[in-house]
Amino acid sequence: MRVGDRYYGFDQPGGDIHISGIALPRFESFYFNTKAPPAMSDAEYRDAIIEQAKKDAANGKFQTESPEFKRLLKSYVSVVSPDRKSIITKGLNMLFSKNSQAAAEKTRHLTLIEILLGERFFTEEGRLKYAEFKDSNGNMVANYANGGWNSYETAAEGARSQEFLQLYTATWRSVYHGKHGADNGYSEIGPGFYIEV
Amino acid sequence: MKSKLRKPISVLLAIAAMLTIVVIGDVPALAASGNKTVNSTASMSVILNEGETGYSSYVTFNVSGCPSGSTVSKIEVNVGTLSYQGAVLTYHLELSSSNKSTVETISWGGAGGTKLTSTSFFATTPANGTYKIRFYATCVGGALVGGTMLDIGTKTYSKPSIKIYYTY
Image (cartoon, rainbow over all chains, first blue to last red; front, side, top):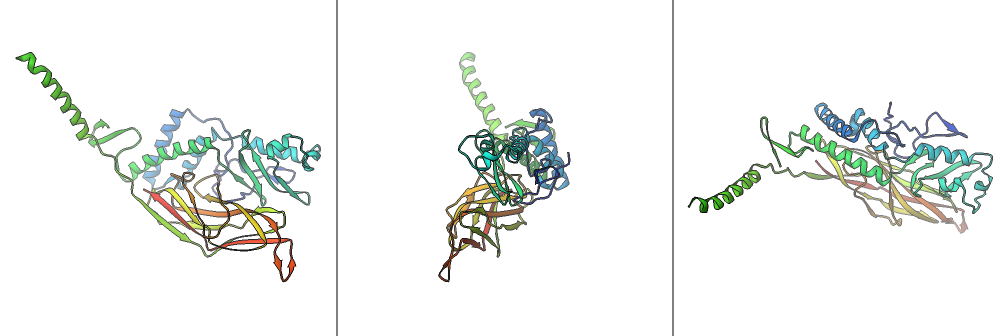
């Protein structure tokens, strides 16, 4: 999987797939997650994170300086990401479908578009100017503004991301700075001699 | 005699074993900390039609020079000096980092010189990196210019700054 590295900050440009002239987000990018099946078990992820941290520390790279770090983090977090691809695709298809008259007139009937778009979309001269995309809990997970895309984190994504970063960083520092106290709870007090702290 | 000595000796041995474990156990090193402030001469600015909602332009901060492996513990953004024409309501600030895939939203009433704080959102991400800020607002009233009421409003925050607190 090729993971885009370009940082835009806000309003990320879309990719090659369009719906009614709107370029969909680059879901393969590091900067836009969508739900994906796990590539390995959590135990295997843990080992992979530790190995990546050791490798990056040996190479003098830290976190996002390493493309492999970005790939692994995206893979780990995407397991709990909302299905932004489906939410956005369905929302745009509904908005631009022939039957979207009711939504365009902002009726008070609860439609799929209103659920998906949270009743917040603005058009100007027939062009979509702004739209919010929400998950089933009503939390905004993405929006379209100024011709680009922004991604907003869920609590599950935040928690999973922190698990990854804390394990990676503790291991990285242990290797890079030669400090003790990596994730396994053992401290080295002499060659080949370990005591459980 | 033997049996009377066994109990206190076994107690002493147990205490000695416990003390041994405590003495040779390693004490975890405390993380060091620091902070870095980056000032900008640029501005976040928005021009909106009355009734329109939208984002401002953004300001970019390039943060470098923090120690290797340093990670964010807190971020403070000073939004800068406010100037405006018309009535433009600010909803929130948005903050992004080149080290994180998602954008943080920080609620804010729009006062100039406000210090907005981000605590956990960017925690454990690298301190060095590129950060961007912008704000989201609605124009509820146009500007009065030369006795004429226009149907546009403007809002600007000049010379914002960012302060990155980090540990390493």
